[in-house]
Amino acid sequence: MNASTSEPVAPVTAAPQEAHGQRLEHFPVALFSSVMGTSGLTLAWLKAHAVLGAPIIVGEGLRGVASALFGLLLLFYGLKALRYPEAVKLEIRHPIKINFIPTVSISLLLLAICYLEAAPELAYWLWGAGAVLHFGLTLAIFGSWIHHNHYAIQHANPAWFIPVVGNIIVPVAGIRFASPELSWFFFSIGLVFWIVLLTIILYRLIFHEPLPARLTPTIFILLAPPSVGFIAYTNLTGGLDAFARILYYMALFLAMLLASNALRFLRLPFFISAWACSFPLTAFTLATLIMSTYLPGTVFKSLGYGLLVFLSLLITALAARTLLAIWRRQICLPE
Image 1: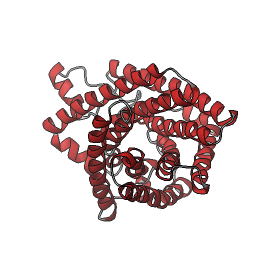
Image 2: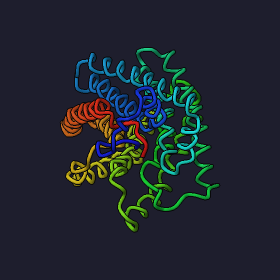
Image 3: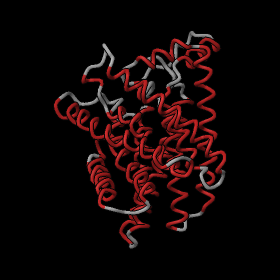
Image 4: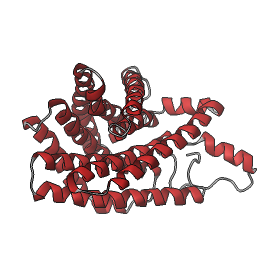
């Protein structure tokens, strides 16, 4: 959210330590979206091992990368919170950036799912911390929506789904660690408010000016709630029923809609917000691979394989563009 290749670089007259401090002050919480995307890719490859016979080492390697990335980003954001608490408060009060703060708790929940089979005890603590933190953030953000004096319809964008999607993720591992009723509680929050927010976001997209270029990649977040909802719902019910089909085919339609507008997205300059497309696509890929286990045949397996290849290339490209922006000192700059 805070950087793009079109932003000005730091002043050349600044001292190295001063410039470093300024960059830390503007370290964007939206970077945790990269952990979500990498964790989602991990889960897709781990599922592909079971469904398609993909090498397990790829998923295990990606799990290590996602874990290291989360630790690194948490360290930098923790230093920012200690040295520049006012900058963090500004993000909390910002009508758009506030919705990216739950990417931290969602990252914990996704890492918990990544370690579910390999290290159940670690997964339990990651899930517990993520669920508690995310519930607190959900209450805080919903409260800010209700009791506010600074929101306008122009602030509404698909990033508002992020606090909602996290609640739907909780049951994916939660069904293993806690009472099913707790998982249904979180699933209900996510599902109902997804429908409410979907109405608001579509109204904003249809009847008001287009999203700014910086926020355009967040349109992919529309794909996340039905995709994650399908995964969580089939975990809760243990099978494929009519409602599960509704969730999956809704996600399939949205994926086709986004694909039909691919050229619009390819013309955009690179922004850190481009990572917003990664997790929704990984969630849909994982949902497709799960669908292939319920409906054996070549259709869903082939689609899942194609999505996995595309997704791997996309996240590799996003990582390369991000590293290039870091090398050019084009991120962590004031807006």
